[in-house]
Length: 316
Image: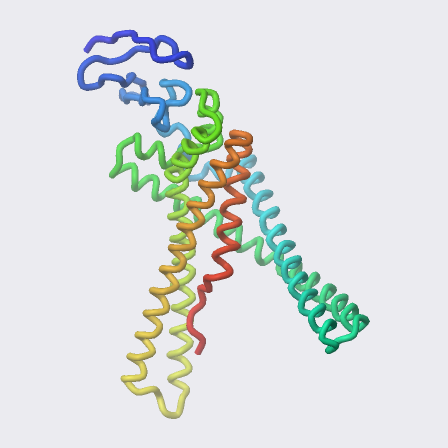
């Protein structure tokens, strides 16, 4: 197999191309094996250099526990949880103010009483919500590390069943990808479309892991509910008949399937909105705009989902 040189474009210059079955791919040494990096600049690994190692953005199982990464992720979770509490508080405060204004307009409440009620509500809710902050932060941290570990497990499994190009697209760092895409000459809509497609693939495993963790939490909630139902049934003077038990089991199964489906829809919306946010942010500032847009898109998706999706077991 002979190596020829062929002009690629102004970003790549003269690069070695391969004759035969490996035409249009360049040999790259990864560890002790030869792998071909994509020369097509529309492929994830090709921007802006054909010598980018496949799967070089992939992280190890414990990389997220390094001091820098752990500190950065912890700060991000703290900010997100604090922002969530503040946003929910302001949203509820606005709803309460509108309700009181309506009562004042209809003469059911005086303005003085409305102001006193507003001050009392504000003091109680502000303290109560921030008291729950440590618990929510601990839960969020636990979820984060569970999701990360599950992502690494899924990547390890995917490595056995997909080629390196697919795995590379699933483990791509969209922050660096957006900057490489800009340097390759992509701008505006073309840049947005490129980042959107890459983000959909790059975020697939993380959203699958997030769905898996929340599905386990949902299943555990149903398990606790079923155990409580059985305990209550044993304490009854007249235990439920077999028909009632079967009917209740069918109801629980149907609600579990419904909630699991809604959870899947919620995470699918999150994946789409996050990728869309990455695309919009990349059009403004590739890199940091990509990261910020992804977070804003995911936050918006969660806000939309929370309004229409409730994932709770049936009440006894």
